[in-house]
Image 1 (cartoon, rainbow, N blue to C red):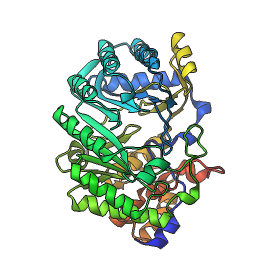
Image 2: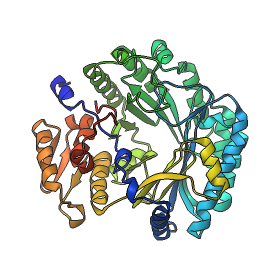
Image 3: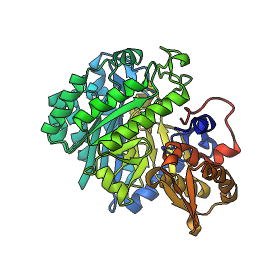
Length: 454
């Protein structure tokens, strides 16, 4: 670990699930009418060829995990399930109505919140309701995020019968002190049981999410968590950097002080050690913070150049259209982004009045579309090129100057009309993407927007 590089490149930066990133969306040039226009254009061009993706945000949790920055609603009142499912299906019906034909669903992902907050009966009502107004692609990929403490065998079997073949469990860390700090008490036995039950229920890919850089977390904690994880041999592992963003309303990151977090150098050592253990166990690094076994679809997608990244994370297939349903969900027409309102009452009110619950978005410019391709290349292939007209942009010269410093530090190698991220540079891929981010470079934020890149 090069501590000088950690110090130099530990700066605030986006995770680039989109470009432009949300804080830099041009809301003045956006309207619901423009969103619908660009969506309809992309939908007509691709629905019957590649299909569309569907992200469904299920925001309810019974308790607050204090590491989480997602939109959620904390409640133990399960009567909220039915009205929310009805609202989701109403939202999809509104899209179906103006799009003019039945969507062909290529991907479905249930995120949260805690999707398994909902009963298996209500999850069945949701999925059955979706496919009353949409068609299922023959090779439709269906996945959900599971909480090991409350994902039951009935959940797993019900969703498997509905076509779900992938589940990802939030593990985070196995140390009790860390778990108490993040309010996520989760014994190894619970994760072991949930993983085994998923495999018995027929899931072909079981993933675990692990986080480094958590409050009170030490190098030994990370090593212990990775070693326990390897015992269960999940097909995919997301080894995330903890994003400390306490200024974002409602995320709950206030139960500990910044002094309780590992130093940037200690955090980087946690990552490097965890990565080494995963590689030694046979996992392959397929993208930023993501590892997969050579038998998993993500590995094949990365090796064949098909890997894609969007608001749902890394995917083995790409669709131009991704509809986000539910509070705070983000949709992508490829030419524009749109985000739903975050308030539950407002979400219900708009749908009751037959209005799509979108409150902000962005129409991508020609420059945005080109830079987006470069950032996707870096995130999914660790390389990019600019030797074709559709990959050139006016800010390329200034971008190359910024890249020169990264090249001097050994984080990338220039090739003829392109670059490749080095092994050393993979840990700094967010910084390399920053060099392409003209919106951020030209308008540096005056307040805190992003988590640190290391």
